[in-house]
Image (cartoon, rainbow, N blue to C red; front, side):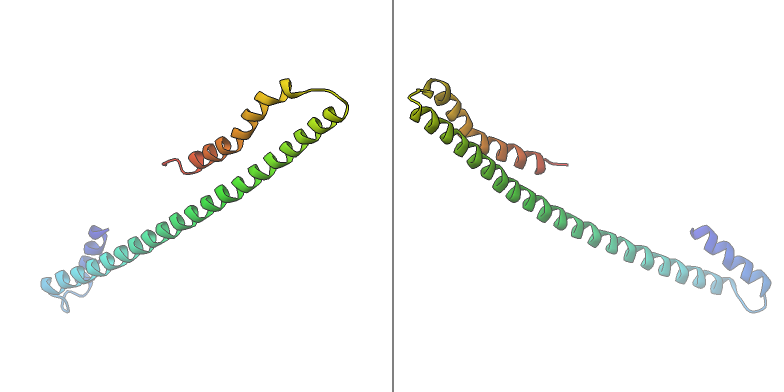
Amino acid sequence: MAKSVVFLCALLAVSHSKLLTPRDLADEAEEQLDELKSIVQGDILVAHNDLQTLQTDFLIYSDNIVKNGAIEIQQEFEAVDGQLTTIKDLAHSAGKDVSSCTNIREEVLARLPMRYIEAMGDCIAAPM
């Protein structure tokens, strides 16, 4: 890009050779390079700010997903647990003992929500 600016200045100098001196040409090229540097630095600063905004948005969005996901997982657990209680109550009123089928499964079921919530958090918060 700098070569293009110098070449353009050289063309102007040739066409107006009576008006420009080599020092004028160098000063003009230097001014244009400073202007270009300022534009590039401004664009870099804008891009940096955009990246910071995107990072903040991502963190907020991922935090909302984890929180809402945890609520939904807990609600599903409560629904399944309620259905299991209903099954046990129906079996009890029918004079049947289903504890041999439900005891171990209930323990596993009770641990599932926290495991899923932790796994979801690990997945979303994984380093990129």
